[in-house]
Image (cartoon, rainbow, N blue to C red; front, side):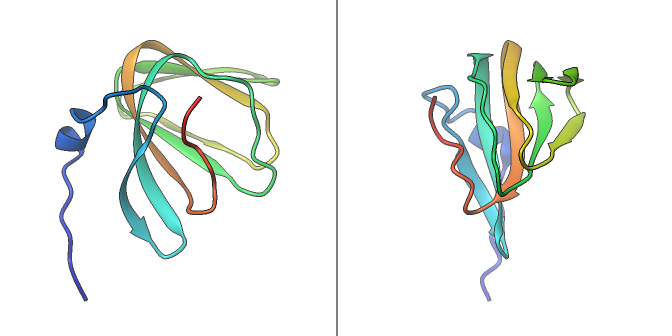
Length: 108
């Protein structure tokens, strides 16, 4: 067994593009991804997987058909499977995403 340390501060400094996550680590069938959110993403849904956002730095809004959820540093939200959502960053933000390894969440 190989134990691997990762540094979220260092990863958050490596971004060249917004909305292009870096996989920090995997655990069983899940992955912790780190992404720079900047501006507005697009409306989408994941039919077969849940997704969790945790704000590491900055401030974002996750729009849903039920309403908007504003998140600041240290806050998170779980998006159930099948729920339409659209992340928006008020300022450039670093967001942790805990999701299934099978979930495609890269690029615009």
